[in-house]
Image (cartoon, rainbow, N blue to C red; front, top):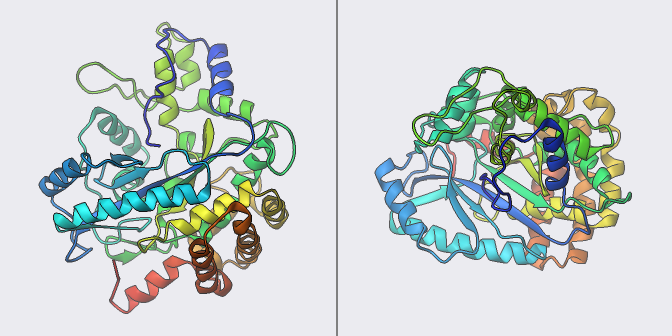
Amino acid sequence: MPDSVSGCTEHRSGVTEAEVEALVRGICFKTGPPRTLGVELEWHVHELRDPRLPAPPVRLEAAYAALRTLPLTSALTVEPGGQLELSSAPAASLMECVRSVSADLDVVRATLRESELAISGFGHEPWNPPTRYLREPRYDAMEVYLDRFGPEGRAMMCSSASVQVCLDAGYEEPGPLGLERRWWLAHQLGAVLVAAFASSPLAHGRTTGWRSTRQALWAAMDPGRTNAPVLDGDPHGAWARLVLDAPVMCVRAAEGPWVVPGGMTFREWTRSDAPPSREDLDYHLTTLFPPIRPRGHLEFRMIDAQPGADGWIVPLAVTAALFDDAEAAEVAYRAVKPLAERAGSLPPPRNPLWVAAARSGLADPELRDAAAVCFAAAAEALPRLGASTEVQDAVAEFTDRYVARGRCPADELLDLFHGKDIPA
């Protein structure tokens, strides 16, 4: 599910502020029973013989041309730094999603191997500086805009990778599977997911002081487009206000570079003499990067890419279980409710809870305790969701290896780093 202008919208010039609010309320939360899910996987691409060696652009171009000829179920796209992304089609079950993406990954890995390339899952590229691979107007404008806030934007564009889980928004009515509850839970449980799956403690071949350097990047960037909205019990209204008050990253042009405004919000644009079109609104929505982004469904953006060929399956399975199984969702809600006080009034990802998750992972005692309860609830829910024995075993192995010990993948990477040996 890559960022792009939605194909379900039509061109309409001069949308008003009121029209924008109504449109956002209508298109960003598609409520109903949770029936489908998906996953977006970003991977770093490197030389097969040594993951420390980035692939030269000319070889990446040839490899990506070959990948685009494959009959994949997932959508295949390329990120600004050359990261490869696979976005699953909406799946009717957890196992349908796992099987389709796993099959696509098998084909992708085999094709890359023919070019002596491989993929790896780290939340942040451990060894090399951020380098742009794509030269497109969108990313040229994004780079200009984000440079105003510091170097973190370029690192996010070119050196980060994630596992993004996509779940239905939920019922309009109250309850464990209701939109309001799921929206609140996502912003509290999100910190637990950051901590449990943190896998980016290195950059430029050095330790950074963060278990999730990737999450630290998001917290250091433009708050107008990376902050979560206010959790006031009205997800529709809160998100509409955030969309209107977010700065405009760029104004697209048919030819030449795109214009990068100086601090104009979308609300101010609607009040100008040359207001935005419906297509401009659709595009603006793709330039907002909060931890949980409503795109009809809920897109969980806080999870680092995971090491191992199938490491991505665990965060997908755990997140799906804790949100789409009513019993597990209720347990998770009770487990993270005490954490809300620690989060305070600041929005994710900048509040104390989220910062602690990115810095300390599950070495933080409160996050460790919450994770233990949530992973246990997810394990109990997975059979009810039809998870295979292999998926259940993978979650159990992750729980024993990391959660039960107050550790996360980043801790293992740090151990290996200090031993001067980091695996692919």
